[in-house]
Image (spheres, rainbow, N blue to C red):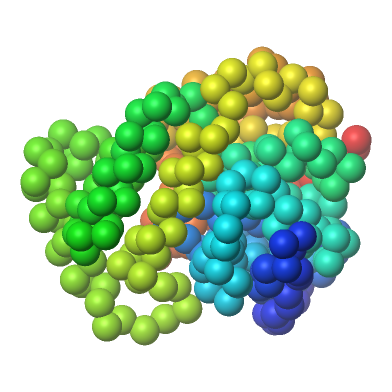
Length: 289
């Protein structure tokens, strides 16, 4: 197994540079990260898969080594970015995590020839788009005022992704705790940017969720073989979204991993279970078409 990491770039349709890390040996597999993340966030998942696959870990636009968000941002832009990485690397498989799964699903819908198989880990679909847009307006105001803890709480509440105990707290307490967390990260060095540095990027992920089709039937024409992957401890609407996708996608199956939650794909230091997730991905990609 090769775990030596190399880097590369792809050029998206609008000229934006998309940077990625590469490790492993075998068929190409692109791992598309979610909100408040970079390509480094699933590095241990890639390592767990590296014995059988060449894994590519792109930084989505506006993050890490990739170019700026730019004009005309939306699902189409993100899909163009993924397509650029697939073309540059020759990869035929993709794993999308959370909002990255929304991007991967949109790519399977609009660019079916780009993918042979796709793995979708808990795409945040089924939320009320008007509610998300209202939260996005509030997020923009709070970020412009320099109230980063408040903006992050707004994003978390909009996506319903906070832990149950955190969700039960008054908003002012949520903001205070988020501020403490941000302060604890300030000044730390590492490959992964701090949440304070990543905070502005949450806007893009909220926009993707608001833009995604409200009706799951929009995905009925997706012909790419798809694994719908989630955890038994994840939020109810995420589990429901996977069940709805299983109902409408003609070539999909769903696996619920017992005891895992929405953070399962992340590195172990973030309480992820990358080895367990890798087991299901390997099994699916080894299946005959």
